[in-house]
Image 1 (cartoon, rainbow, N blue to C red):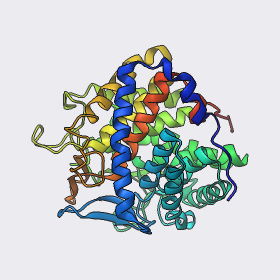
Image 2 (cartoon, protein in one colour):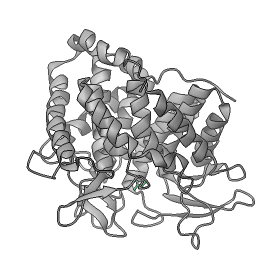
Image 3 (cartoon, rainbow, N blue to C red):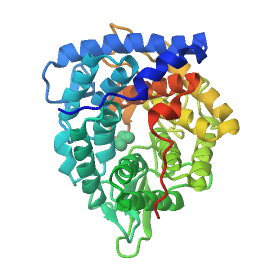
Length: 409
Ligand code: GLY
């Protein structure tokens, strides 16, 4: 296997560590001590498993998934973040093994979840190790994903299921899959990936948001003329509600789209979503949202720690893009991270099996994964820790590879 030595990612921490305040450093350092123990225990339990962990079932047994599951890339992504933090070869090896479990997905054209699966696993792997085999797999994945784009609608189709309900469903979560396409254009020089990503984001911005800047979950499009047929929910409490994780996906997605395009419209929109979330009267004092901002029995509703982790990670990046105006968003991200780092949410060695964060909600209307750990909460929590560490010591753009947006029209 041909690898490239991780560039500045490993060296700069040593140089810049003194720029960091002691308290900030302690939060991230303390969290990674727990992460190291949890991931070590997870690897022992998993052995040579060809399946990756997703959650715990009702009796506390681990739920392991095959590569086709939308969450299959998050566990290898967690291992890559552990490698990024530690620089230790044993974590690269472990990350590689569980990343390769996901490889078959590169040609799975039956879903939009390609970015979740491949960019969190192979994408981080390529960024940190330079393994050229990962690059080919990622490019194949991007080619597969764009086959789901419909130019009349201007979007990538999300689901194939529920054909009797929706003609061409597009869910807000789909914004997260665009990062793979931006990467594919940068690496290949083929602007068609970029153009699909921008068109999808523009269509989503136009149709998916209400006047108050909250988003619907599922939009159904007419494939003959691109008209919106219905604005629905699938995982929220109602068609007019603000499903918490959906708001988080939108915030993260438009922040990332601004990074990759420098189109001001995307940045302004990300900020509006952030303001909707942060000023919402139903956002609890500790900033971990209820599973839906409009859940009917607030405050007696489960929280969704996965939404909090995604929002936290997104706010760190948003704060950088907004420069001087970004300070309140950095403060908010720090507050969320501090909350998530307390025993109320971050499990000790003997709780929550091998998962980090407690109290997530997967799909409340179907009573699936309610108040359990989910691997994507852990993934975005780790990403938020890494982002905080890099912002506080001043080397975020040097090590994230995110400042090199290229314009393709
Ligand atoms: N993309 C699936 C979810 O957020 O539940």
